[in-house]
Image 1 (cartoon, rainbow over the protein chains, first blue to last red):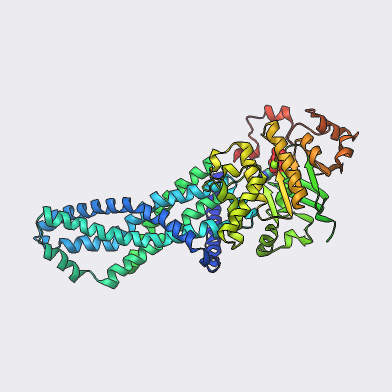
Image 2: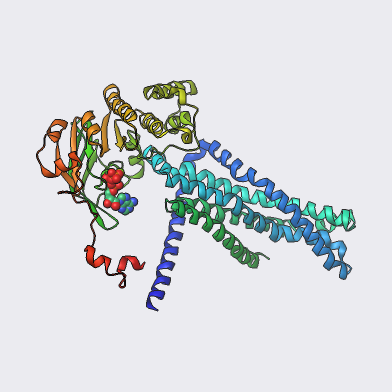
Length: 257
Length: 274
Ligand SMILES: Nc1ncnc2c1ncn2[C@@H]1O[C@H](COP(=O)(O)OP(=O)(O)OP(=O)(O)O)[C@@H](O)[C@H]1O
Ligand SMILES: [Mg+2]
């Protein structure tokens, strides 16, 4: 009984301490931005590895999500004779929720896990220690470009997810289900508000981008330098960032809409 | 310029609650090869991590080139490290870069040399370790001995004043060992580098070292020129040099009484409960 309580206490403390270390890492990274501007090519390289290479999965997933939305939306709307609003339903669902959230989740699984594993393995094989002894700060050289690339990538990927999803909805809704093509776009134009819907969606995805990228680089950097340690860290990155994205989505949604 | 480039005075260090270094005092002369020998686990790697500023002593003074390492800020520490090279036990090469780029790494990070100059510098270092032809290999395509040599070339890429070698001979065949011995000597002579060689390979240590420290129980057990150490009559030194399993230097890691430990399975002791 006592030991159970003690264990919960110890666990909570360790979570708190890790959160603290993650915040310190964030501050360190932000602080080293000015001196890293000269090395923007490192950032560009990571932007490619983290962002561009995540594109295929985002596009394919978005296409399917858009089509499913159209199918389900149409079936419901048709009962009320409101199938002409299909475009609005698809667009609002994607800009407000599905774009940012699903892009975030996919990003965490595809890029976040890879980042954690990469950094954790560099730590386990003393590559980070080696850098430090060569007077190269791994936070600046390794973590920062990856963090920034992830942070920037998620909003862009989310926007793309939304756009491709709307296109998927169009393909199915207009070509298969027979919604009028002009109506599909015009209800969207009428009903989607730039600030309320598009900007808020982007803001959400930026928050997710910061969260996932910070978590991914932190977990790798903080991992126990063993094979099991790196494995655990990678799993934790995916699990925690998925949960955090969903929880943050709820809080942000309740504040924004 | 003082004669000793590294000075440790009464250094105390605990790791994971266990004292590793106890009142350790030693001096590393400038421009010489100094070997630090001692059994596994006495804290040889720990000593190098202290000198490199990766660990702080709990107590005592540690001067490197006149600077008190534990008191240095991050920036000053990095400044100092530019003048140090370190050869890690496992090489610590960057696994996504080929041999050439690994050696280029510190140069690219710290200098703005134009590419042709950089190339010349790198090829010179590679020639030094005999691997100019291997420049396009990736680290996972290298043998253990080659990895060590690439790491060595990288450690001296910035022309450091001090190079620390952590177990440069372990896991190598006699020929590779001889090559590394030759290289360390050559680097010391041609580049006037102060070399600190940490090892438990006594034969090699005595071959290259101008001065030898033998560690045991967290402090210096014996010190002297290679000859003096070799001819030492002290029991603990002899045990190590001749490689006897047990003697004044115990075989066992510090532990509870064996008998009670074996038969106490029911009452798990506190560290196993976690
Ligand atoms: N990261 C660590 N955390 C806690 N204790 C450590 C750590 N690394 C080493 N130690 C402890 O410090 C002591 C000295 O370790 P160190 O690695 O310096 O030994 P060593 O002399 O280099 O041994 P070897 O010749 O086997 O490399 C050991 O008792 C070890 O248990
Ligand atoms: Mg060691």
